[in-house]
Length: 145
Length: 145
DNA sequence: TTGCCGCTTGACACCGGTGTCAAGGTCAAG
DNA sequence: CTTGACCTTGACACCGGTGTCAAGCGGCAA
Image (cartoon, rainbow over all chains, first blue to last red; front, side, top):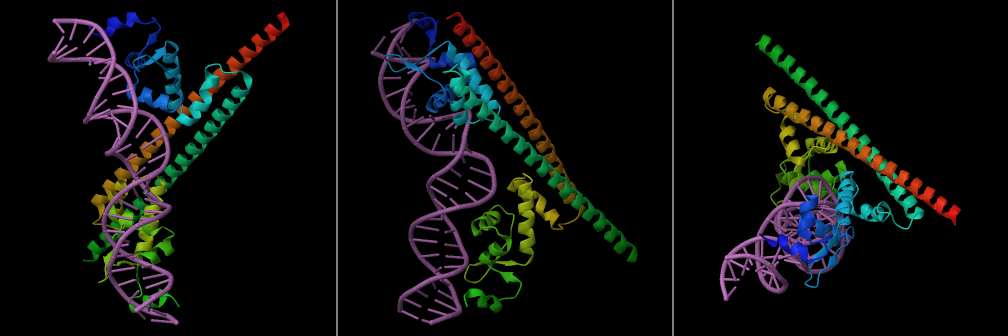
């Protein structure tokens, strides 16, 4: 058996980074990054190893969800204390603001992409027309030859 | 008078990079980048200065339009010969493919953003519900005190 | 002891369009 | 000649989440 037996030597609900990575499906690199960005707290064993309690799994899951919505780590850092049940209403109001701003930003981006799509469609139309013109010219040249 | 008078010393329709930048509103840095990426051709004066003919203004304009549609420089490089009237139909068919793929990609991105927005909205809803719960709990605690 | 795995920190790479700086050449105007 | 505008190439920085490698320590198993 590998290192798994060591798990029993510590409080059952504390794990190290590899274990958390396994449970969440997120690489250790990324977990350290989240800590560096202030999204995820870790205790330290005497030997310097990071330790996490069981809640960390939920926290990481929430972080991934929020990242998937397009929020960046700064926004998530502002959001997480509330999402985890922080000091109550005030941060929640703030967090709602963050979320609403992000939704507005997403709406803007969607509009922007629609515009791009329209521009591209216009471009395609122009090309088709030009091709048709070219073909017509070629046909005329062929007939006159 | 500045260097403008030198313009008369060369064929009237050839300009240098600064002039092209002024006419297109695009920085010289960016023009050199486009050349490096194979989007824009430039001749060279004996002293090594880039020279452009009047058509370059249109080319740059087209490049900017295509960039604004979200195409990257590689795609634009594949697209431009046709957009400028290349060897005829075959490249145009190819170009149309490029454009269509990009439109499909844009559609995907739009769908992705919509999904993100929905996820975020769900998140906001969860937070609102939790807040409502917290408030209810607080009210109960207050009443029982 | 040695082997091996897991952990640590630190650093570079990616993408892609653009800003910006450095060091130096060209040439007209004064 | 100097000044100064304009040109050249080359290189680093940005953003942001992640991969990946290096060098080194901790600790269990054989």
